Image 1 (cartoon, rainbow, N blue to C red):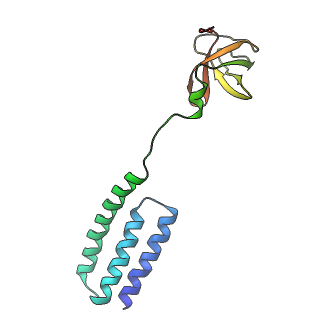
Image 2 (image 1 turned 90 degrees about the vertical axis):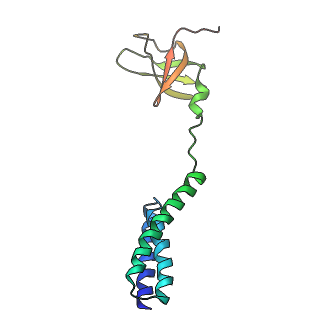
Image 3 (image 1 turned 180 degrees about the vertical axis):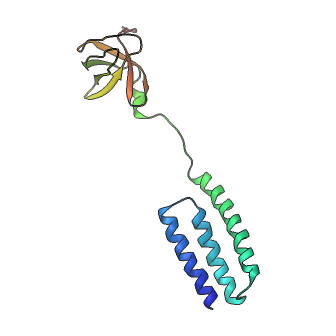
Length: 145
């Protein structure tokens, strides 16, 4: 019975670590320790239990990983910044060759830069033609007018 308590103690420790480092490794170790703890009630002090623990933990890890890939699907859909493409705004701070400026679209101001123009004065109307990281790429040439 003492071996079962040791396995259950390890299970609790592994599960507590999983809370802070969620990678399913410690979860599989914790679940494996619980199952081996139950087996150690019937078969105490067996080297085979450690071997079963290693194999069981590995199989649990593979199974949990497979399930997690189905449950936690990462989709890189469009974000709100995609709605700003082709919108027109007014520069509140001019853009120079070395410094980015700010463009106001609606009630929000966004950092903006221009690749083609060397200098765009504030107060000019610009069109958003793209974005990179957290800055909008704007152009002073307004098509579609």
